[in-house]
Image 1 (tube, rainbow over the protein chains, first blue to last red):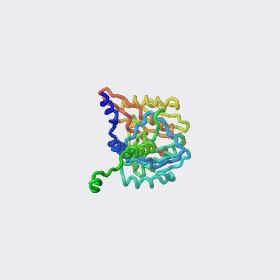
Image 2: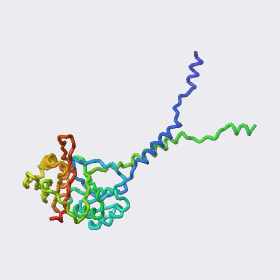
Image 3: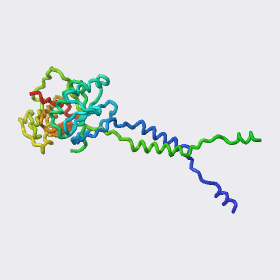
Length: 138
Length: 154
């Protein structure tokens, strides 16, 4: 009787930890594959308009961004572009990938005249697929 | 005697901390990840050509947005009615009504003043996009033909 109690004490419990590293690395791989680092961290003051019909855009690779901030300045790929020259910046991208979707992040209080100029430039660059970035709600 | 002893000790790489390191990297990735959540209203711009596509006037709902955000809506049966910014949902109602009448032929033309706010245009576009009706034979109709008229066009 006494002997068996002692025996139990000496046997230390053990959780197998050999595979935790494998599990963790698997998770790392998942995160690395799904992560898309935001290429541009712009410090622009843009308040997007709200719309009830906002849809999620699932494609993430075939996308280019265009920003118009609260002062009507147009940005493409982290650099300031005169709004009359948007076409020359977008058309090489379209030549590379005709299915490119341009996402227009436009400040809500911008006058439509500016937007109209940019839309015209996009038509010229044959960038027909566009998305007006909006927030849910409204 | 000595040789035997050496053989007995197998080489060992400590792997106990591997999991810790891996989880540390996970935490780094989790905190640095910004899930890109793109969302918006999809549109397809028309080709820039001199050809003018002719549309019968009875198939057109034309909406004009003035600099104050008020609308003037022209459609068969609605002869230039005024819509204030508070009544934008009226646009949806009229577009739905015309969709039932005209089916897929319906074209919504949206003309925004140069001085109007972008938000007003998006709000109206939103109403047009929201319009959807189910026909008697069970098809769901939406206003797919939306034309954003350039401000330069008179």
